[in-house]
Amino acid sequence: MGGKPCIRGLRVTVGTILGLLAAGNSREGILAAYPYLEADDIDAALAYGAWRSAST
Image (cartoon, rainbow, N blue to C red; front, side, top):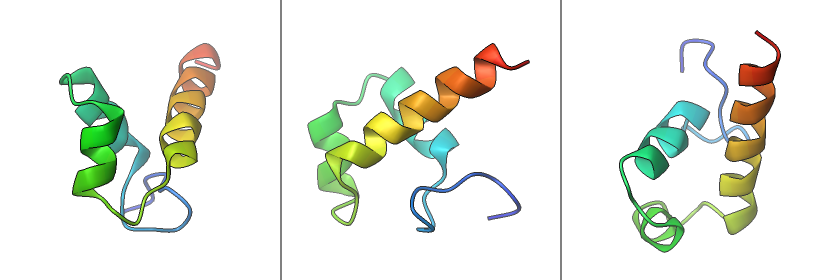
């Protein structure tokens, strides 16, 4: 994925998850679109995004 941070080694980037949330998609909708993700994966993406924004 070009060095971008991914969820649990899957081919879904943190940016994809954050972008979907920012666009107004629900957690349930994201999990339905990506059935191999878990609710904790969305939490981890949010935590990573918060950490990255605080460290710059």
